[in-house]
Structure formats: C-alpha cells, structure tokens
Length: 200
Image (cartoon, rainbow, N blue to C red; front, side, top):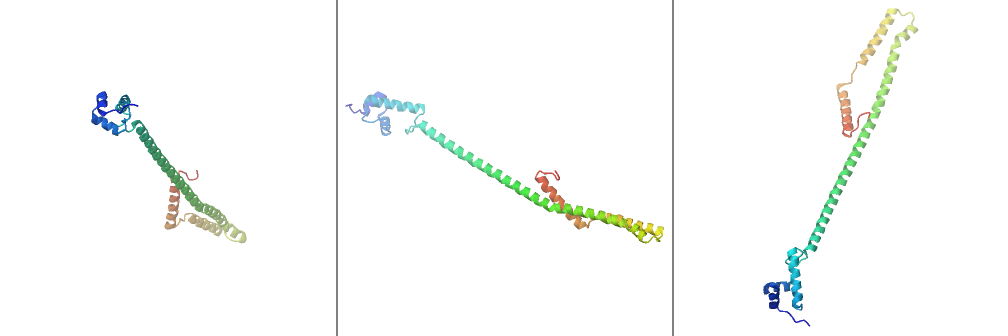
C-alpha cells in the first residue's frame, strides 16, 4: 500500500508552495491517497491544461465551456433567425391580403361602373333614334299635307335641324359634371395604385 504523501515532499518535487498545493488539493486536482508520482503527474497535467487554455483557474473545462457557449449562441442566432423569418412571412401575408382587398375594391368599382357604360350606350342609341325621327318630321308633314307650300316645308326642316343642333351642344349641369369627373378620377387612381391600366 502506497504511503500517504505530505505537502512538504510534494512541494519539494513540484517546486510549488504548500499554499498552492493546498489550493490544488481543495480543487480536487490531487488527493492525499495519491502516490507522490501520481499526484505530481496530476498537478503537471492540470497546470498544462491551464497554460493551454483547456481549463480555468477554478477548474472549469474551458473546451467544454466554450462548446456550451457556442451552442447557446447558435441556438440564440437560430431563434432570432426564425423570429425574423416569421416576421417576414407575416409581412408578406399582410401585403398579399392588402393586394387582394385592393383587387376586390377595384372589381367593386368596376362593377359599379359597368351600368354607366350600358346607360351611355342606351342613351346614345335613343338619341340616334330621336334624331332620325325628328329629321323625318318635315317629310311626314309634306306627305300628309301635299298642299303645304315649299317655303313652309323648308322652314320647318330648318327649325328641326336647328333644334337638334342646339340640343347636341347642351352640357351637363356643372355640379353633375364635377361629380362624374371626380368618380372617374377616383377610379383611375385605384387602377394605377394596383398597377393596372384602364382597358388593359
């Protein structure tokens, strides 16, 4: 059975003070049950690890500690990356929803506008019919009253043409004209903001 070593003998062998050896003993670097050579090897290894940066003065395994801190940092970076990716996904989803809403609003406005287009076509068709019938009034009078003198016939024809000409120059009331212009300005602004051209 190996003899228990004393700090004095170990101090002579290692060149360390007894106080330093006591610190190493308390830190568990060596034990009193170690042989003189065994304790010396443990102390040399410990001091070598300290110098190489493998251990701290408190006995921490710095390689393990660095790996642990590196893993913690990697986890933190991964969490932050995931958070930013989620924020980006939410932003893209929001933009997509906003675009869909804008598209629906544009379709709604176009749906409201379509009846106006049909109304214009109907009015244009009615206007053409009215003009044709009005221009036929002098001839209808001439057919029913052949005795009607030519000057009266020509005068009636001139009056009808003049009335139709005057009606063609009639403009919308200012208030109605402004409302129509404002409606079309809003419609054009909506199509431009959605990147669509009118009629395109």
